[in-house]
Length: 233
Image (cartoon, rainbow, N blue to C red; front, top):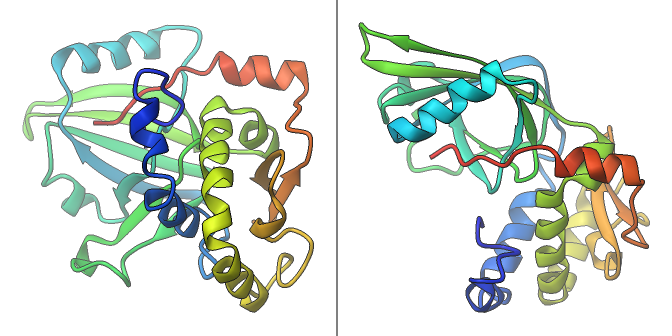
């Protein structure tokens, strides 16, 4: 996922369009789990970070620009105790608004209560602390999202292009899934099979919407370009 859009690795990610691409579409446009997570709910992620990367987060907390965005589908858990079992860093994620997929019913480890955060979701870095008892750093993030961010975020735009290129492979399947979906996009004008030219994004109700021209307001695009992009592992 993190290679999408990379000129250096273009031959790698393009070679995965027919295999990895359709799988990404199914994850991103999950017909049974498409509503956003809201209301200040908490998620947690354990990860191994180098001292240099931890120091970067500390510096970002002190800087005037404390924003970032997820580069790929990112695993997290509703269960803090489970997340603390992994790595030397615990990410504590307060969700104001973000698109996620609940994998607990599909996972071989349902007790991990896994939530998959979608690529392009933005966050602010609220704080970093070290817990000497657990010998672990804790990094506090707030996940935020709105339609302008989704349409303007460079990560989302790159990922949209990858999905559009792969979507032709899945059109019959996705048409059937979307036709069966309850809600605004059921059998309507916003099925993924119609999205062949511009970008696409989710509105506040969770429905996929098309940006036919792929053009964005300059101020929105500049704002998204200024958001740093950091991996969480």
